[in-house]
Image 1 (tube, one colour):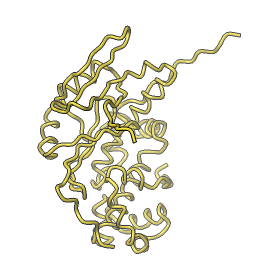
Image 2: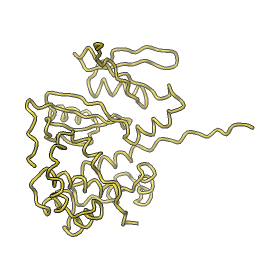
Image 3: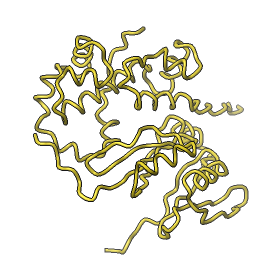
Image 4: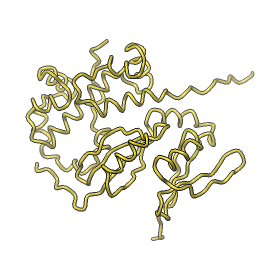
Length: 141
Length: 145
């Protein structure tokens, strides 16, 4: 089998400049790439210290044929999927709330640890998860 | 013949998603209802309900009811709370109203449903955020209109 790993995730955002500011100023991510590609930018960000993975901030206007659909999905909360891991969910939650990040749920104990959810300014959903050292037992049936 | 050019529809306003998120976060508050959600969105209940339905395909009342029933199903499946305790925990003031809505939505009473799903505890291994979306009932008749 080939040796594969995930390197870049392309995330649709409503506005690249606003997204870059949000990722860097609210989440504390680093800007890794910002290339003017002639009318649009290739921008990537990543958490400090994580060198093998980046998120590319994609403006849906690169695909005018689907842009209205993508923007509509974003605004309706239909684009979710980035799960961010932390070693202290409650502390990270408090810090991000203080920075004005919009949370959709408070930290909750679940079988895999502690978990809560938040959104970027465009409606994209994120999970913030602290993985438990030992998963909780399955409730007895 | 010239092609007809239509402007792309504007994306739904962000405040509607905030209202939906507010339901997810505060469903347990028995005082939460459509007028309260509309006030938060700075809109009249009728206008708010219409926009919400156009955006999400169901009224805010239906969304609130199905979220509460979904949370009730979660507690019935995974906790040892009594049906009365579950009723209060998901934002109902009346056990009769809770039981009637549950039966209308799910097809059986909370007690019968609990007996039916007790053997399905492995579903607890699915992350809670996905369970919330996947398990939420979709068809509760809207009795507010």
